[in-house]
Image (tube, rainbow, N blue to C red; front, side, top):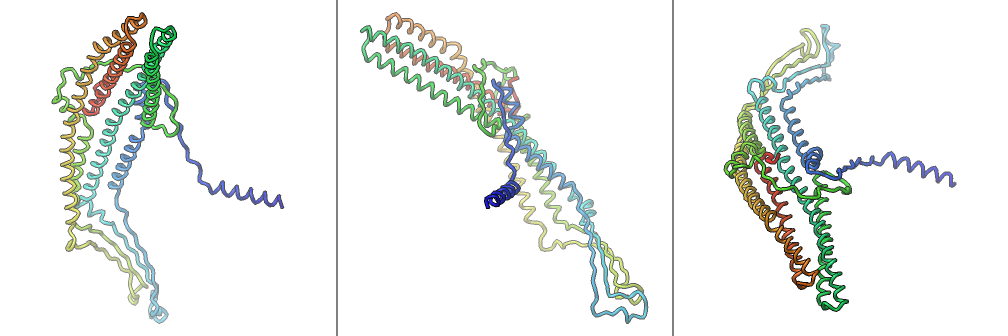
Length: 441
């Protein structure tokens, strides 16, 4: 009895293994460590989700073009029948039969398409759609590569801030220990000790917050790089790159950048192609008013000879719908409305280009000014003031309040300098996307 139960269990397990769908293959995506900016861009271009979706849309448009180029298949018909009230035995001549056969062939409007030009117009519409899909894919790459670069800079900034927060926490920890030593010696009050301990704890809180921001930035960057499972451990550059003005921006003005964008932006080119496709669709819709003429050939026979019910007969003809009630007025109106829409969308893209370029240029100019000021003056002066106050406090020349205030000023100035440098690069990448070409070599 136990053996029978085991056998039943084995059979059921085999059935379940056969019927169960195979597990999906989940690609394990790795990220090199350290991850550099060029590596991140190359990985995104190879496997980014949105680029793969854009590739699929392009392939779909390519399939539509193949369908438009295909010739209609001819239609062959064959029939057989029987005449129940006819007796071929009563026929005086040979060849009589109660069985009928017929066959037919139609070109499905192939010849008429060549003469009218509908097939050519369909191909033109499909070609414009394929060109638009290709340009749309390029535009997605334009926007998303800039997004990857900006996210990479934000991840580097988060790592830099983590290191700076740890450095600040160590500095304030040393100050707290020094205050406690002085408290035991009776040189400071308990209030100073509590104040120093509070500053140290706040710095430790900042370390944890910076670590959480780094983890979030890494997760977002990994998502852009198409990580489909657990985010792998990876490091980015330790420092933000030094600011440098690309040669392409030497002497640049918003007007010159707008003109450059009009020559390079794929979305504007795609809008122009879509407008031409809409024009071709209007022509096709108007041509659709002409009926599709189909050439037909038929053969019919029931018996042979003069006394046959239907002697062997071949007929040729044409078939066409009469364009009396429906002359494709709705299709024409719809295609004309689509053409107006495409023209407005192209004009909207032109206006958007101007807005994008001027907005990005203003952000770049502001970030450049803040970066130059913070790197050349603000950061150095704040660091110098902090170091002097720390030295004076160790010698007992200044109060704890002055020591902590100098530390807070230095921390705020340093974070502002790091943020300004990150804004410089993100605004530059935003300007790349606005112009439609990489300005930074």
